Length: 113
Image 1 (cartoon, rainbow, N blue to C red):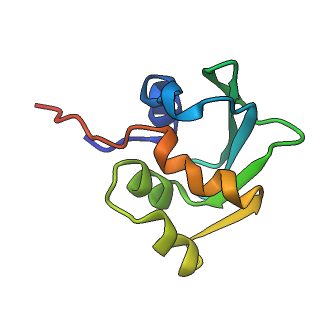
Image 2 (cartoon, rainbow, N blue to C red):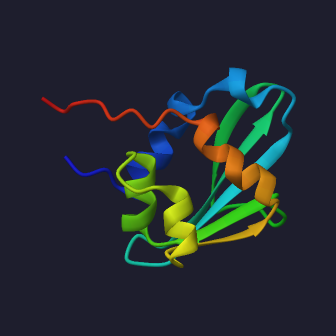
């Protein structure tokens, strides 16, 4: 079963690894530009994280990409750095935070059997 952007953001809080966030107080935003277009943000505050549909006005980091690219990254099928280097994903804002995102979320894909 293919993950959708809506499904991705619905399950994102359960993929969040608070132990990796330590004292982070940041907001990560995704700007999806294709058929599942939209803005979503994930706020990390006080060791907890939650999704903000519609995004925020001043995120710390914004990823701009397509749903196919981001879902592949989220499922561990696409290397985020390779996607960045080949122009499949653009990053604006705090690059250090952007590099930490793979550590903040579990990318293990559950089998849908």
